[in-house]
Structure formats: C-alpha cells, structure tokens
Length: 400
Image 1 (cartoon, rainbow, N blue to C red):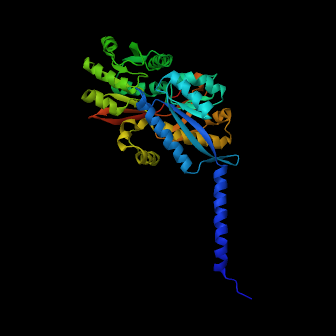
Image 2 (image 1 turned 180 degrees about the vertical axis):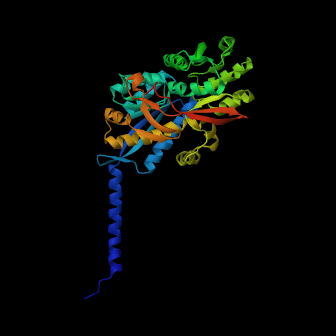
C-alpha cells in the first residue's frame, strides 16, 4: 500500500481551491448592489468656486466609503454610485438635472447646491421620495418637504454666531447689507435684521442687486453715505464678494467688511490685492488641516487633484466630504433606504466634524430639525493671507 503524499494531494487540491475562491469572489461581486447619489452643483459660472469643491468632496467621500468595502442593509451588500451634474447655479438647469438624475440614473439621494436651485427641485424630489442634503439657504426648510435637509451652516447660523463676535471684536454699532434680488436672498436679509436686532445692531442701509451683477459702485456709494461701521455681503457669490470689497475700498470706505457667505480666499486676494487687508470672511471650515481626519482628507485631495487647488477652496470641502459618511451611518442605523425612515434617523444624530459637534436643529423656527448646526469659521486677511480667527458656535435660543 502506498503512503499518503501530502504534496501530491495539494497538487490536485490547489486547482479546486483556486476555483472555489474565484467562485466566491464572483458571487460576492454579483451580489453587491449600487445605490445612486446625485450631486448637483455649479461647475461653471460665478458660483463654481463653491460648486467644484463640492463635487470633488463628494467624489473623495464616496470613493473612500467604497474603498473601505461599502455597507450592508438587511444582509445585502451595497456600494455607492455618484453621478454629478453642472446646474450652473441656475434653477431651471437644476430642475433639468434632477429629472435626469431620478428618471435616467435612478438616484435615491441627492445634494443640490444653492438656495433657489434646491427649492425649484423640491416638487420632483418630494414626488419621488428622494432625500436631499443640500448646502443651501435656510429658506429651503419647509414642512411640506420633510425629506430635504439644509446640510450647511446657513446664513442665519452665520449671522447668529458671528455678529455678536464681530460686535465685540470691532465695536460695531451699525451695519449695511448687499443681497440678491431672489426670494432666498431676501429671506436671508430678513434673518439678518432679526439677528441684528437681537444684538442691538442697527442696519442703516441695504441694497438689492441682480444675481449676475458685477458693478456695485452705485449701490456702494449710497451705502457708504449712510456711514455703516460694517458692510456684509449676504448671499453674493465668490466673485461678487471680491468685487464688492475692491469697489468699496476704491470708493474710500474704511470700515469693516465681512464677506458673509463662502468667499474664495484666493480670488479675493487676486482681485482685491493689498486693499483686502483686514477683510473678514465666513467659511465652511478651516483653511489648513488641523486634526488627523482633516489631514486624511488633505492627503486624499492632493493624491487626486492639484495641491494648489486646496488653498482657496478647502473650506468648501469639509461638509460635503463628511456627507457620505453621515448618510451611510444613518442608513446602517435604520437598516433602510426609505427616505422618511432615514430622515427620522438623521434628525437625531450628532457627530464630530472639523469645527466640533454637528447635529440638526431648527425645530423652534421651522417646525422641523433639518438645519445643520455647528460652529461657524471666521478668518481675516492679515499680511496678505487668510488667518483663522475663530470657530464660533451658534448661540442657543434662535435655531434650537
């Protein structure tokens, strides 16, 4: 009788093992399903300094999740499929894009940048039960559209957090505002007046301009004549923020300028030059990565995109980069893709982000917890560069 030879056995078993491993891998790949997320942002036009970083952040965030293995719901394995669109910051273009996303690409979740843009998409989102997390104005929060969140520190949170800080730091007593001739921007202007009143600040002048305006000298002349201690720029786009700063200084304005909503630091320095000194800017996050998580994002960014693109727009990356993780956590917690179930889970979640604790609030004001609440970043141009000043929390009593 021949002795058993293990090496011979392995010779015959090896092909079988390889076949079984291949079969298991193939089965795993076959059972992985995709969930589609639609990202609508301005990839061209004046708002592209906001929109391009948003798109890139979503790409990096969803890629990270997929590289780490995706997620499971009720025993089924899933990975994300991201589809992106350029809505040019035009509401009509956003509506066209969301129709393509839902009806052609089967999107179950969405991000829509802007104020009028997500509002214009609400009916079709609601009709198709698509949950949206939008970097948008607080005015998008409506009881009739409970599946839409404002996944951004709205301009109301910026006013609530930063106005009392600047009042103390700069000793301002009066202010003026420039805002767009749009429903969202007009609503934001009313929010400014409300928060200014709470802080005993007098809004002595306001000017409403077209969303495409580039020449601000006429309105600035009237504003400067009212002698405000500070001029703020409400929902003006990044290019307009820079132009307002340049033209105000050219007209001799010496007071405080606060570019309230998401200016592009590089663009301000390029257009305004040395006259930008002292200008305050409200940003979506820190310019330089500070924590291990932020440094991880920076590493991923420079592996995929030019390092020079980080500097001016990095603050627009943080919120949308974390969005895929937050949404996935909610889906895993409730083990469902049902939009209403996921929304109910999201509204009670909290997590740590670049500036500290993040959570949804707004029930006191809107009747729904759909407004992202987190500290608001303030920087100032000092010595020709943007210097971090503070991450100010939203005070209680306004958006709880």
